[in-house]
Length: 180
Length: 180
DNA sequence: CTAAAGTTTCAGGAGTTTTTGAAATCTCAA
DNA sequence: TTGAGATTTCAAAAACTCCTGAAACTTTAG
Image (cartoon, rainbow over all chains, first blue to last red; front, side, top):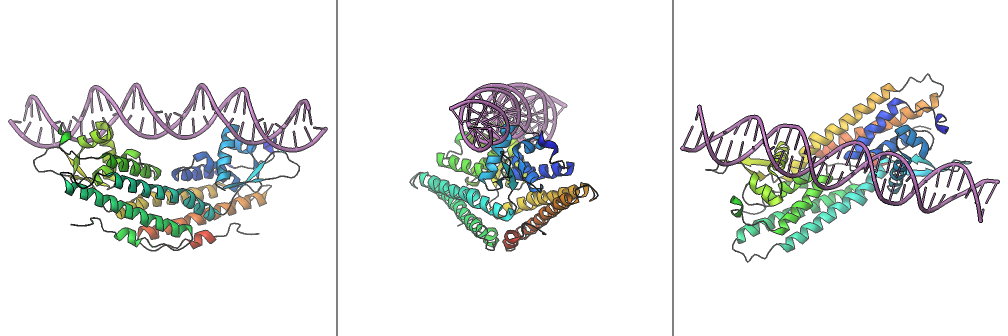
């Protein structure tokens, strides 16, 4: 029953939490993760799982799962309150680093897998022996174009992740139709 | 029954289509949209709705809905084949422009709405009159920090959309804890 | 104007994802 | 070692999203 102790979670905070939740959802995370992170981010003191659950109306199980995912991404850290037995949690505040980490561990992997899959598919296309060599050549060309794009994208991501400036112009000016 | 006319859609093409579909899904579109765009992108000639449906095993309804969304985003264009009654479709090939458009029309809007919601919430917080002014001040500060971030993000997006180079360092070096 | 071909819309169903609630597990104090 | 509090896990339920199939609508040829 220690849920009167924290007292002050204003309606406005819950609105922000949900707003951030939607943003996170849009970015491929689960909405409750964004809500929880925000609740913690706006709290001057670390909160326990029970408080989080009661504020956001989530079951203990859901809180536990979302928290461990947040911890895995480094978005939330465990924290101790001296005499207390249970765990408390606080938000990681350097959002830039968080974004960077997701770009590195998730998006970059994705782009690489994409390039690999393209390469494999290209190899699986039948050799240019068939009755329609022109059609095959066309498809090959397009596949190569896609692959070039994905490599550009990978470079772009790499630059972002390592904090360098990024120039999107090669991306935009890439020619559409490779040969005649 | 004109599905023997196009003849050559290789298994490898369907794999690529699905790969792209997953990428698109990850980016907030529906998987079938990515598959369809890819099928068209790899086809030297425009395809009709019926062919698309039979290649990808989708019902006419699903094809129609996905196509109209693709057309809305400018990813696919209608195309006429002289004597034919039905519509044919071909893929927009300048992927850079497509990305740019989505960034401008979707992500940028999202970020703006996010900033608005933050502003509203900030205004809804009770005035600093309460028993815990320190707590309120803390929350206000964090909200302002979030807002500053979203403005940085908006600037970054704007730069990307207008094809300018982008420097992510201010994003990374933003201080976490605003005041003492 | 009528009929056939093509397309769009939409309610219902199928499939997927998320949440719950309860049992199992863990942790620490006594 | 035992037991109470806290957390994690997981099968089943709820919620949600997407697709199907059929009906309505549009368009064009005759």
